[in-house]
Image 1 (cartoon, rainbow over the protein chains, first blue to last red):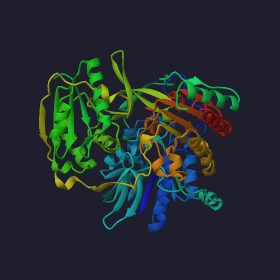
Image 2 (image 1 turned 90 degrees about the vertical axis):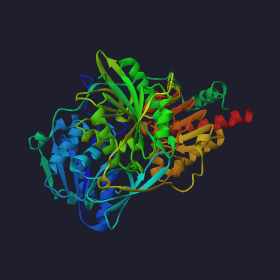
Image 3 (image 1 turned 120 degrees about the vertical axis):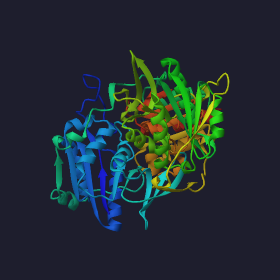
Image 4 (image 1 turned 30 degrees about the vertical axis):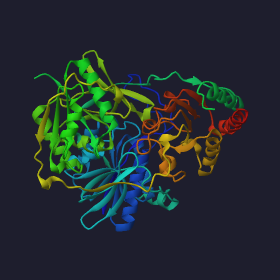
Amino acid sequence: MKILVCMKQVPQKDAPLELNETGTWIREDVSYEVNEPDAYALEEALRQKEKHGGEVVVITAGPARAAQVLREALAKGADRAIHLEDHAFVGLDPFNTAQAFFAAIKDEKFDLIFTGLQSDDYGYAQTGVILAELLGWPHATIIMQIEKSDSGIRVKRELEAGYFQFVDIPLPAVLTIQSGINKLRYATLIGIKQAKNKPLRKVIMPEVQSAIGGNLQKIERLYVPQKAKNTEIIEGPPGEVAKKLVDKLRNEVRVL
Amino acid sequence: MADTILVVVEQREGKFNRVSWETLTAGQALAADTGWALEAAVVGGRVESFAGEVAGKKVSKVYAIESANLEPYTPDAFVAALKQFLSSRLPKLVLMPHTYQVRDFVPKLATAMGRTAISDCIGYKKDGGKLVFTRQMFQGKLAADVSFTCDAPWFVTVQNGAFRGDKVEAGASAAPVEMVKSEIPDGIIRNKPQEVFKEAKQAVDLTQAEIIVAVGRGIKEQKNIDLAKQLADAIGGEIAASRPICDSGWLPMDRQIGSSGQTVAPKLYLALGISGAIQHIVGMKGSRTIVAVNKDSAAPIFEIADYAVVGNLFDIVPPLIEEVKKAKAGA
C-alpha cells in the first residue's frame, strides 16, 4: 500500500505563547514539535507498510523550520518527504491547506492518506476530510484501528462516551487518526543516518498558487481568553499549600 | 427572503444528543441578537417524532429530512441530503453541535458547497455590524474571533457545554413540521458502517463519584500514578485521567475523562498535572469545585479552576495526602 501522511509542526505543548503585534497570530520564536496525532498517523502508516509492503510518504506545509517534522519521519522509516515550503502556508484556512496538498500530490497515486484527527494549534479538525472531498475519495474520522480486507479496509471509528464502530471502506480513502491508536517508536541511530539520503521534494508557493484562493474564514483577533472564574491562587511552600488547601476543602468546599 | 438560522440537531439511538439543545439555545440567542428567523432540522431514517419534539421549542419551523439511506449514518448520505436541502433554502447560518458525527461530515458538506465551517465555537459577538464566532486555539491557551469571508450559508459548529441546554426556550405554540423526503441514490454511499458497540464493560461509572482525583501528563511516569491513587484513597475519591495517560495504558480506558471518555460533574475535581486541553475540559468543566495543580502558570486548566496551585505536583501531593489524612482522622 502506498500511504501519504499529512503532518504538521505546532508549538510545543508547554511553550509559553505571546501574541504578535497585530494580535492576529502568535510570535513564532517558540519551540516546535510534531502535532501529536500526526505522530500516531505516521506510526500507523509505518506499521501498515511493515505488514503489507508499499511506501510511506510524508508531507507538510510551513516555513523552513517545518522540515524538522519530515526529517524525524524519515528517520523513523518514512521513504520520502514533500515539503510545501513557505511561511504563507501557516495562515491558510483548512480549505486552502487541503487545496495546496491536493495540488502538490496530483501526480501521485496513493491508496491511503492519513492525517492526525486535529492540530494542536488551530484545532479545526477539517483538513483531512476536506482533502478527501477534493479528491472525491471516501473518508472516516477518529480512527483507532485499521485492517486490510478483501474489498478495501475495515476501520474502527471512535464515537463519543466510550462507543466504537467498525466501518468498511473501499480504497483509496482518507483517514484521520486518533492519538493512542498504537505505541510510537523512536528513531534509531541508523534511521537518522539513512534519513539524510532519502528524497525530500520541496514545493514552492508558485507551484500550488493557482489552487489557492482567499481564505473563506478569517481570524479577526487572537487573544488570551478572559477568565470565566474567580480563581483563588494558593501559594507558599508545599507543606503550607497542603494545609491551606485542606482548610478550603473542609470549610469552603465541604468535602472533608 | 429574510435571513434564516438553521439549527441541525443530532439524534442517536432514539435520543437527542445533549449538545443539540445547547446548540438550539445558541441559535435562539443569535436569532434574538440578529433578528434572523430561527428554524431547525432533524436528519435521519425516521425522524418525524423527533421533529415534533423540537417543534415544541421556540423555533419558527422544523424540517424532518428523511430517507431510508440516512440510517445508519454515513458521511456520503448526510452530505447528499443536506446539500440538496440547503441549496434550495439557502439559510444564512447553519448551526450544528460539534459532535464526532458532525465533525465527520461538516467539512465535506461545506467543501461540497464551496463554503467553510468555523468549528468548535464557544460563543459569538456582534462586532460593529460584523458577526464573529469565538473559538479556542492552541488547546485553549488562546481564543480567536473568527469571521466568514465567503458567501452564505455559513457553517458553525458549537462546542459541548458552551451554551446551556436547559435554557432552551419553549415556543408559545408548536412550530409547523415540514417533511422533506431526500432522494439519495443507493450507489453514492461508499462506507459500510457496522453496529455501534461499547468496548468491554465499563467497570467504573465516574459520573456517580463525588470526588475525582485526575492525573495528566504531569505525572510523568506510570509508577507515579500510585501517588495520585494514595491521594484518591485518602480523600475518598475515584482516580481518573486525561487521555494521554489512558493511551499509554497507565490507567484503564474507563478511567478517562473528556470528549472520548466520561463526562463528569463531581463536587470536587482535583486535577494533577493536567494542562486542560479542550477535549479534557469538556468532560469536567461542570464540576462544582475544581482544584488544579500544575507547574505551568499558563496552563488552560487554571482558566476554569476555583483553586489554583502553581507548582510541582510531586512537591504538593505528598504533604497534601498527610494533611487530608489528618483532617479525616480529626473529623
